[in-house]
Length: 235
Image 1 (cartoon, rainbow, N blue to C red):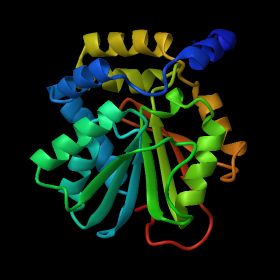
Image 2: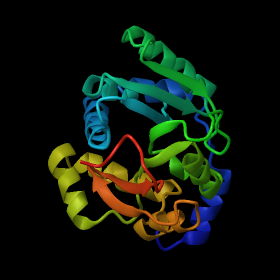
Image 3: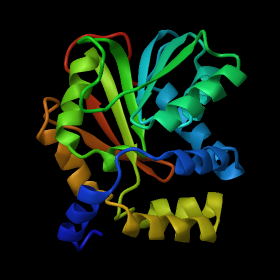
Image 4: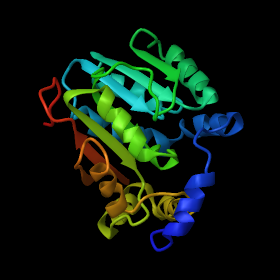
């Protein structure tokens, strides 16, 4: 998709922003596999590096809620909130959270990234994994992220990119095998993913004004900060 920006725009236009019921159920089943468990461990480990013992975290496009459950294992003092545009995903997330006995620590509701039902300066950290390429208006969504972040707070927006660096691909092959790496390449062609350059450029069109790309496992992370003082700091 890197060399076909028009194709990417068309795919993004018609690509569903919310995952429907049957697909959500399949996604939840896949989330129990070894591959996805390791993926959630990597994401939760990276996110926890930006968290103090206590604070509030919002996960956008939380899906079946497994990332929030994994994050609670690492930082049990956090107030964790998830949103998803798919009603089916929200139902699955709340079911998984209930089974884990964490309804007191994690709440998930149905909401759109572009219009979030939270007051200004609500969260110390906002994250999203594998979701932002679904957003119909990512600039509007990131401005909403800026709005709900407390001053000094971080936003960590993770996604696959269509031009994953060779060294990252080698790491993925080493940890997950060649088949997984091949499937990721096919996925990156079929989905409207950004390039590293276009992903980083998103920040310049938002209230954040700047951001930087780094990698956590196979995922590119657009790291953003709302200038000011806050409770969280990168370690």
